[in-house]
Length: 257
Image (tube, rainbow, N blue to C red; front, top):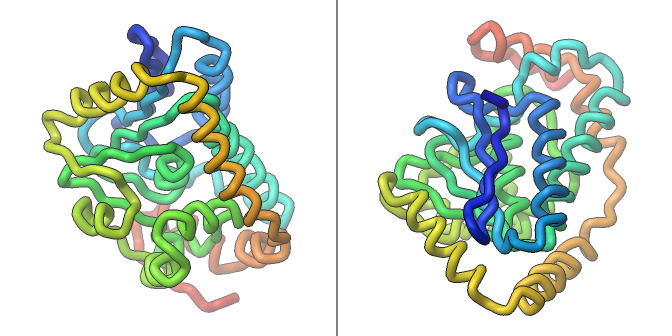
């Protein structure tokens, strides 16, 4: 089976991240496949809503596959990675169809990034969401991803979430505004499709224009230069230590270097 599956069921398009043995951690090829899926759904006049889900019951997406970071050495490596990520997430955010993330289990790091780029998020009671990079890899996010978090939960809560590197459960995620609804695990797909069909029955142009208007308001505030911040993290000894520790399944020793 491919690592990313695209299907269409009537007016609904469905993307499934399909690496359940790795908690659906994203390879670079999967990111490119997600970009292609966005192009595909937008080119299909019969597709009204796009749903995204993870295969299995352990994770939506547990971030980027960390083994791909082994070769990172220069500032350009980090800049290229964040640019690649933002190319895909911005494309998802710009899809001229409503998008709904169906979150079961972990949505961490890049997985949260994908969920935040969607218009709506439903999760199960066992969901865990967060960006624990201050505890794991010692890298950073693009300013657009910081902005997506700030848009949903505000600057103070964004700082607290990132500084503590903790994951939040479903009910806290709902209270913070990270997700729209918490639904029983055995009803996630059904409730997601019901919501998508409700949206699909409405005036397509009204829905698309409303989505784009909100997106433009958000993007207007994101023109911030941050290459120096990205370079600081991705060229650090701490980042190399974080990657090595993650792959060796041990706790990293960060020195601020």
